[in-house]
Amino acid sequence: MTGTSVTTAGIVCPGFGVVRDEPPDDHASKAHVHVEDELKAHLRATIDGRDLTMELEADPACVRAVRHHTAAVLAAWGLNGHIPDATLVVSELVTNALCHAAPADTAPGRPILLRLVRRGQDLLCLVADASDRPPALAEADFAAETGRGLQLVAAHSRQWDWTHRRRRPGKWVWALLSPPIDASR
Picture 1 (cartoon, rainbow, N blue to C red):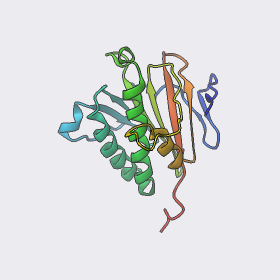
Picture 2: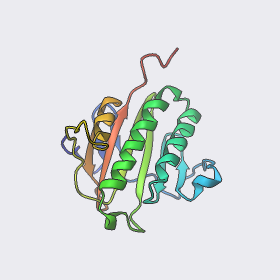
Picture 3: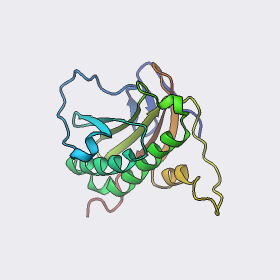
Picture 4: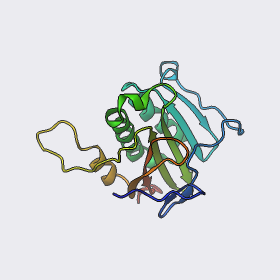
């Protein structure tokens, strides 16, 4: 994949439109999503009905929290048909950010961000980290235990790509999910 273009308006995602490069302003009116006590240490979330941002610690335990929280948010948004694919996609994108961003890139003040942006029945999952290194879709070694994350993202999304962040070091990696064909059943 090649880097997606970033305009002054934000990240351009073909088939979805433009998404702001940075999450919504923290001072905007938002409802706070309830998070179980054990997960509160791993993420801070705000929701405005269409755009959810979670700030994640550089801790592998946050991946489980992200899956559960993503499922809860999508259920609240009425996007139940997206839950299986979305939880897999966010798990893989967050895991890639944790594993492949340099340790200095995930230092305090440079959190990993997960954003879920919905437009109608379409869902855009974005993960930001402070590394400028692009994600690499590699041929998986069948004997290896790792190396299939982006292949799973590609298989479970309509499209995926990445782009550099405009105002901060790092990149956004995103995946666009459309409703499953049988979502209306």
